[in-house]
Image (tube, rainbow, N blue to C red):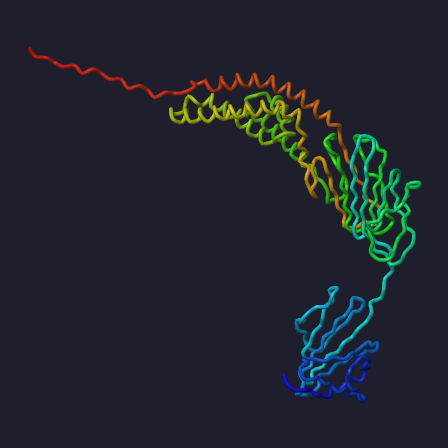
Amino acid sequence: FNGAINLKLPLYDWEQVYMNSQAVEGKTITVQIPSGDESTRWESMVPKFEQLDLLALDNSQFVEEWVFSVSHQWHIELNGIPAIWPSHFDGDDIWQFRYLPREGEQLTLKAERPTAIKGSQLAFNKLDLNVTVGQQQESIRLSANYKSTRGGPGQIHVGKGEHLQATLDGRSSPLQIQNGVIDYPIAPGEHSVDLNWKRLSEIQFKTVLAPINVNADVTNLSVTWNWGAKRWVVWTSGPVIGPAIIYWGEFLAFLVIALVLWKTNLLPISPVHWLLLGLGLSLLSWWLLVVTTIWLMALDYQSKQGQHQSRNTFNAIQALLVMTTVGVLLSLIGTVPFSLYSQPDMGIMGNYSNGSQLRWYLDATTGAVPDITVYSLPMWVYKLLMLVWALWLASRLVSWSKWSWQSLTANGFWRAEPKKSIKPKVEEHQE
């Protein structure tokens, strides 16, 4: 627009102008907007209050807009007219209360500072504990972020440990482990701690996580326990959000099915042999056990009912059984070397866990890392069991191969189309 604007605006009784380029006379301020400018501003102080009343003026020369940005240290109540959506937001996620009052509308604002509650001066908002299992020792790494309202000495109890390497806020620090305690300096504000140390520990069937206590409230606690490929993890216990071993539930269902098959006599082989077959395949592939069982039952059915089938039906089933027999026998033969080189499939899952890496998560704790226990066996135990099972399976495959051929040929291997007989035509001759 062209031309300057001169406007006199009333001030509130409680308003104290302290920074402006305008003329103030009593409770009136003269606003001057030079030609070419679009706005002007001044700043005022508001004394501490419990209740503040705002009244929109009756004036057609200007439109009022009220915007309140309230920090997190205050709680306010606004009553009178409805708010509208803010035109923009301040930083630090501070919400803005925006109003466009009409003439004569009133807004009441009540503000109070929430009463402070007693709390700790130190809190960890993230803690990651990573443990790697070795032959005679464990490698432990603790990475954490903390907030503190004041500085001072801090302690982290780690039990037995040695060869500590410490980093505070990304800088190396000469900390030591003395009598199972790491003394470190706490600085006010937000900071990070990274500790690496070794712990002598002999892995046994029952292994308990090293006791660690940061002596402060902790949120977002994650524990990662790396076991590698030299231990066979069979069971774990710890926080709810952690690894689950699905194998034992599947194994229980397998025993129930074995009992049903034994009572109903549906299996053409000994129930003991089928149970031994399932014990080995349960750690390799449940699907191969299912397919093998269906194959055995199908062969037995065909040997008993094949004589009642039509030629086309019999031949179609025979062709399908031959292909299935070849596939099943080759798969079972392949499991013999595979079982000796593979890792046991215990169905470990949950929180991104697997057979070699176990992960737990806890949303909050008072400082001590939760009790976590892992039950494991040396991998050579699994290899030895699979060697015995593989030798047994090799002997049974010879017997099952003979039985499968006998079942396929019990009613003939293939039924050819019957040949049509042609009768010679006899001609009669009259004399």
